[in-house]
Length: 360
Image (cartoon, rainbow, N blue to C red; front, side, top):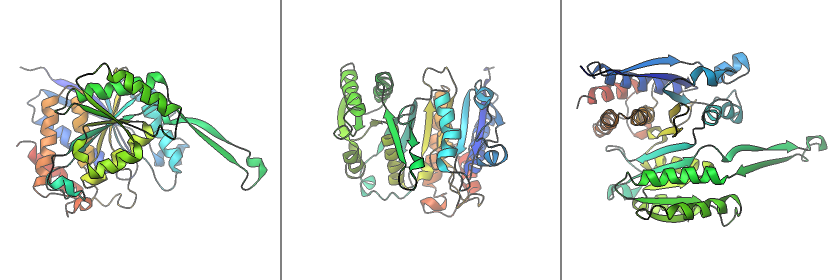
């Protein structure tokens, strides 16, 4: 009899549609475990952090929140943000606190074009498109350095300074991560993205580290592209992409562009990884809390379920991850789609189809 592989997951639904998509992902993973004949099991514990928690306590998560989830195998996150809480308060108070507190320095965001979903990109009809954005997730433009001063001068006199911080260590570890990832892909290529013509300190350091690291990977093709040119390349020459590595802000923007080109942000999965595994990694869709459709049962669970597949890969369950990814492709090809990708299915409809297609 095979030994049961048992994983303890901290579920953090957060705000808005986060609860709906996390519930969908949990149902899919529980169905996967139920069909494993006792070889796979998940234990879930839900944490009610988010904007409602902030309204009650003045904090987005408990003061000892990091300690509460530190020993879980992974965190499964929904979304953060609600109109009653300023965006910078909700983001820094929950998601960024978890990412930075657990040194989840590699954010991996695949861009996939599922069958059955109409892409606004004409090239998607004639080319096989599949790339991944690797985002530096611990410093750069989201380092939180800066401040606001001179408010006493009165209206119009305040000065705000927001500094991007690039360290050689931070640049090198994410760039090496991207090169190692490229070696696992059919096309071995890494595209580095900066704006070093205008940001001549931090991003020039990034460029120099990229050139130095590239010398250790002679089997991997490389290119360095300015972020504005890369945004154009996402649209005009996406077939030339494999692994795109960029700073915190640039990769955040580009990965959303990639998912929009695939058809919807609702398709976008992501993994916030602590590659050394000193802390739990966190897996989340990137579509946000979508207050306009929250509670209506029509949000797209594909991004959250794709994030669950990335979690399975992180656990070393490659075959199980592929079963989930195959179920996503089959469900989309069958036309079981939510409104954001041109369909009329509910969240529960898509979730049920995904579970049915796990058996295929």
